[in-house]
Image (cartoon, rainbow, N blue to C red; front, top):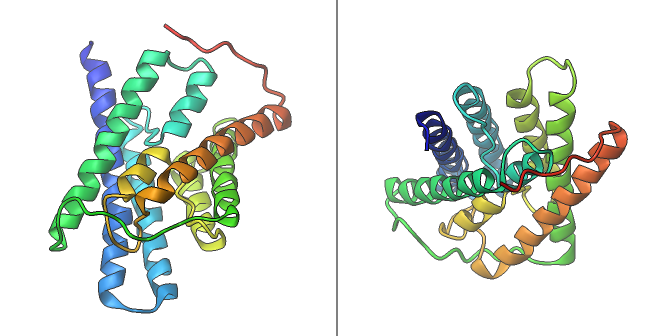
Length: 227
Protein backbone atom coordinates (compact mmCIF):
# COMPACT_ATOMS: atom_id res chain seq x y z
CA UNK A 1 0.00 0.00 0.00
CA UNK A 2 1.40 3.40 -0.99
CA UNK A 3 2.15 6.07 1.59
CA UNK A 4 -0.55 8.25 0.04
CA UNK A 5 -3.21 5.58 0.60
CA UNK A 6 -2.04 5.13 4.17
CA UNK A 7 -2.36 8.89 4.76
CA UNK A 8 -5.89 8.79 3.32
CA UNK A 9 -6.89 6.00 5.72
CA UNK A 10 -5.25 7.66 8.74
CA UNK A 11 -6.97 10.96 7.91
CA UNK A 12 -10.28 9.07 7.74
CA UNK A 13 -9.61 7.64 11.21
CA UNK A 14 -8.58 11.01 12.66
CA UNK A 15 -11.57 12.81 11.16
CA UNK A 16 -13.96 10.19 12.51
CA UNK A 17 -12.27 10.47 15.91
CA UNK A 18 -12.71 14.26 15.83
CA UNK A 19 -16.42 13.98 15.06
CA UNK A 20 -16.95 11.37 17.78
CA UNK A 21 -15.14 13.57 20.30
CA UNK A 22 -17.22 16.62 19.35
CA UNK A 23 -20.58 14.85 19.34
CA UNK A 24 -20.23 12.59 22.37
CA UNK A 25 -18.13 15.08 24.34
CA UNK A 26 -20.58 17.95 23.88
CA UNK A 27 -23.43 15.58 24.77
CA UNK A 28 -21.80 14.52 28.04
CA UNK A 29 -20.81 18.10 28.85
CA UNK A 30 -24.39 19.26 28.29
CA UNK A 31 -25.69 16.40 30.44
CA UNK A 32 -23.34 17.45 33.24
CA UNK A 33 -24.38 21.10 33.03
CA UNK A 34 -28.18 20.96 32.87
CA UNK A 35 -31.25 18.75 33.16
CA UNK A 36 -33.04 20.74 30.44
CA UNK A 37 -33.09 18.48 27.37
CA UNK A 38 -33.74 21.42 25.06
CA UNK A 39 -30.52 23.07 26.26
CA UNK A 40 -28.72 19.73 25.97
CA UNK A 41 -29.85 19.43 22.35
CA UNK A 42 -28.70 22.94 21.48
CA UNK A 43 -25.26 22.42 23.07
CA UNK A 44 -24.89 19.05 21.35
CA UNK A 45 -25.95 20.51 17.99
CA UNK A 46 -23.40 23.31 18.24
CA UNK A 47 -20.65 20.84 19.16
CA UNK A 48 -21.63 18.56 16.29
CA UNK A 49 -21.67 21.33 13.69
CA UNK A 50 -18.28 22.68 14.77
CA UNK A 51 -16.74 19.19 14.91
CA UNK A 52 -17.98 18.28 11.44
CA UNK A 53 -16.81 21.58 9.95
CA UNK A 54 -13.34 21.21 11.44
CA UNK A 55 -12.95 17.56 10.44
CA UNK A 56 -14.08 18.09 6.83
CA UNK A 57 -12.08 21.32 6.40
CA UNK A 58 -8.80 19.89 7.70
CA UNK A 59 -8.81 16.30 6.53
CA UNK A 60 -10.19 16.98 3.06
CA UNK A 61 -6.77 18.52 2.39
CA UNK A 62 -5.03 15.14 2.73
CA UNK A 63 -7.79 12.54 2.33
CA UNK A 64 -11.32 11.97 1.11
CA UNK A 65 -13.05 13.23 4.27
CA UNK A 66 -15.97 10.82 4.06
CA UNK A 67 -16.16 9.85 7.75
CA UNK A 68 -19.33 7.95 6.95
CA UNK A 69 -20.00 4.58 5.28
CA UNK A 70 -23.03 5.87 3.38
CA UNK A 71 -20.87 8.60 1.84
CA UNK A 72 -18.20 6.02 1.00
CA UNK A 73 -20.79 3.66 -0.52
CA UNK A 74 -22.27 6.53 -2.53
CA UNK A 75 -18.89 7.52 -3.98
CA UNK A 76 -18.16 3.84 -4.66
CA UNK A 77 -21.42 3.60 -6.61
CA UNK A 78 -20.24 6.57 -8.65
CA UNK A 79 -16.95 4.85 -9.55
CA UNK A 80 -14.79 7.10 -7.38
CA UNK A 81 -12.97 4.22 -5.63
CA UNK A 82 -12.81 0.44 -5.75
CA UNK A 83 -14.70 -1.95 -3.48
CA UNK A 84 -11.52 -2.82 -1.57
CA UNK A 85 -10.68 0.85 -1.07
CA UNK A 86 -14.24 1.48 0.11
CA UNK A 87 -14.10 -1.34 2.65
CA UNK A 88 -10.75 -0.07 3.94
CA UNK A 89 -12.22 3.40 4.42
CA UNK A 90 -15.21 2.00 6.32
CA UNK A 91 -12.97 -0.04 8.63
CA UNK A 92 -10.94 3.05 9.52
CA UNK A 93 -14.10 5.07 10.03
CA UNK A 94 -15.39 2.51 12.52
CA UNK A 95 -12.03 2.47 14.31
CA UNK A 96 -11.95 6.26 14.53
CA UNK A 97 -15.46 6.49 15.95
CA UNK A 98 -14.95 3.67 18.46
CA UNK A 99 -11.64 5.09 19.69
CA UNK A 100 -13.17 8.56 19.91
CA UNK A 101 -16.17 7.38 21.91
CA UNK A 102 -14.01 5.30 24.24
CA UNK A 103 -11.54 8.09 24.95
CA UNK A 104 -14.20 10.75 25.51
CA UNK A 105 -16.12 8.46 27.87
CA UNK A 106 -12.90 8.01 29.85
CA UNK A 107 -12.03 11.72 29.97
CA UNK A 108 -15.39 12.43 31.58
CA UNK A 109 -14.73 9.89 34.32
CA UNK A 110 -16.66 6.92 32.99
CA UNK A 111 -15.67 3.52 31.67
CA UNK A 112 -14.16 3.74 28.21
CA UNK A 113 -16.79 1.45 26.75
CA UNK A 114 -20.28 1.38 28.18
CA UNK A 115 -23.58 -0.26 27.31
CA UNK A 116 -25.95 2.41 26.07
CA UNK A 117 -29.44 2.21 27.53
CA UNK A 118 -31.23 4.86 25.48
CA UNK A 119 -33.71 2.99 23.27
CA UNK A 120 -34.41 4.72 19.96
CA UNK A 121 -37.13 2.72 18.25
CA UNK A 122 -40.39 3.18 16.40
CA UNK A 123 -41.52 3.78 12.84
CA UNK A 124 -41.39 7.56 13.18
CA UNK A 125 -37.77 7.57 14.32
CA UNK A 126 -36.72 5.21 11.53
CA UNK A 127 -38.45 7.32 8.86
CA UNK A 128 -36.75 10.36 10.35
CA UNK A 129 -33.38 8.61 10.02
CA UNK A 130 -34.13 7.78 6.38
CA UNK A 131 -34.84 11.48 5.73
CA UNK A 132 -31.68 12.64 7.50
CA UNK A 133 -29.51 10.18 5.56
CA UNK A 134 -31.14 10.86 2.18
CA UNK A 135 -30.76 14.59 2.80
CA UNK A 136 -27.09 14.16 3.59
CA UNK A 137 -26.41 12.44 0.25
CA UNK A 138 -28.52 15.00 -1.60
CA UNK A 139 -26.88 18.04 0.01
CA UNK A 140 -23.36 16.65 -0.35
CA UNK A 141 -23.81 15.89 -4.05
CA UNK A 142 -25.64 19.13 -4.80
CA UNK A 143 -22.86 21.17 -3.20
CA UNK A 144 -20.06 19.36 -5.00
CA UNK A 145 -21.84 19.82 -8.35
CA UNK A 146 -22.47 23.53 -7.93
CA UNK A 147 -20.59 26.76 -7.31
CA UNK A 148 -22.12 27.33 -3.89
CA UNK A 149 -19.68 29.13 -1.65
CA UNK A 150 -18.34 27.22 1.31
CA UNK A 151 -18.37 23.66 0.01
CA UNK A 152 -19.16 20.47 1.96
CA UNK A 153 -17.38 21.74 5.08
CA UNK A 154 -20.10 24.39 5.41
CA UNK A 155 -23.26 22.85 4.00
CA UNK A 156 -22.97 19.29 5.34
CA UNK A 157 -22.64 20.48 8.96
CA UNK A 158 -25.52 22.92 8.39
CA UNK A 159 -27.75 20.11 7.08
CA UNK A 160 -26.92 17.71 9.91
CA UNK A 161 -27.16 20.45 12.54
CA UNK A 162 -30.55 21.44 11.22
CA UNK A 163 -31.66 17.81 11.01
CA UNK A 164 -30.68 17.28 14.66
CA UNK A 165 -33.16 20.02 15.56
CA UNK A 166 -36.06 18.98 13.34
CA UNK A 167 -35.78 15.18 13.33
CA UNK A 168 -37.18 12.79 15.91
CA UNK A 169 -34.24 10.39 15.50
CA UNK A 170 -31.47 12.86 16.24
CA UNK A 171 -30.12 12.59 12.68
CA UNK A 172 -27.33 10.07 13.21
CA UNK A 173 -27.13 9.45 9.43
CA UNK A 174 -23.94 7.41 9.86
CA UNK A 175 -23.83 3.60 10.30
CA UNK A 176 -20.28 3.54 11.71
CA UNK A 177 -21.03 6.23 14.28
CA UNK A 178 -24.39 4.64 15.10
CA UNK A 179 -22.55 1.49 16.13
CA UNK A 180 -19.98 3.45 18.13
CA UNK A 181 -22.72 5.37 19.95
CA UNK A 182 -23.95 2.08 21.41
CA UNK A 183 -20.74 2.20 23.48
CA UNK A 184 -21.66 5.36 25.42
CA UNK A 185 -24.43 5.49 27.99
CA UNK A 186 -24.93 9.22 27.60
CA UNK A 187 -27.14 11.80 25.89
CA UNK A 188 -25.92 10.79 22.44
CA UNK A 189 -26.00 7.02 23.02
CA UNK A 190 -28.21 4.41 21.40
CA UNK A 191 -29.09 1.03 22.88
CA UNK A 192 -27.60 -1.90 21.00
CA UNK A 193 -31.12 -3.20 20.35
CA UNK A 194 -31.84 -0.07 18.29
CA UNK A 195 -28.63 -0.07 16.24
CA UNK A 196 -29.71 -2.49 13.50
CA UNK A 197 -32.91 -0.61 12.71
CA UNK A 198 -31.05 2.70 12.49
CA UNK A 199 -28.38 1.29 10.19
CA UNK A 200 -31.00 -0.21 7.87
CA UNK A 201 -32.83 3.14 7.81
CA UNK A 202 -29.57 4.94 6.98
CA UNK A 203 -28.85 2.57 4.10
CA UNK A 204 -32.38 3.05 2.77
CA UNK A 205 -31.78 6.79 3.02
CA UNK A 206 -28.60 6.34 0.97
CA UNK A 207 -30.57 4.63 -1.82
CA UNK A 208 -33.39 7.18 -1.79
CA UNK A 209 -31.01 10.12 -1.63
CA UNK A 210 -28.92 8.70 -4.45
CA UNK A 211 -31.94 8.14 -6.68
CA UNK A 212 -33.23 11.66 -6.00
CA UNK A 213 -29.85 13.16 -6.81
CA UNK A 214 -29.57 11.22 -10.06
CA UNK A 215 -33.06 12.29 -11.11
CA UNK A 216 -32.82 15.97 -10.14
CA UNK A 217 -29.33 16.50 -11.56
CA UNK A 218 -29.81 14.10 -14.49
CA UNK A 219 -26.78 12.04 -13.50
CA UNK A 220 -26.06 8.92 -15.54
CA UNK A 221 -25.43 5.55 -13.91
CA UNK A 222 -21.74 4.66 -13.58
CA UNK A 223 -20.55 1.10 -13.14
CA UNK A 224 -18.81 0.78 -9.74
CA UNK A 225 -15.15 -0.29 -9.68
CA UNK A 226 -15.23 -3.71 -8.05
CA UNK A 227 -11.47 -4.17 -8.25
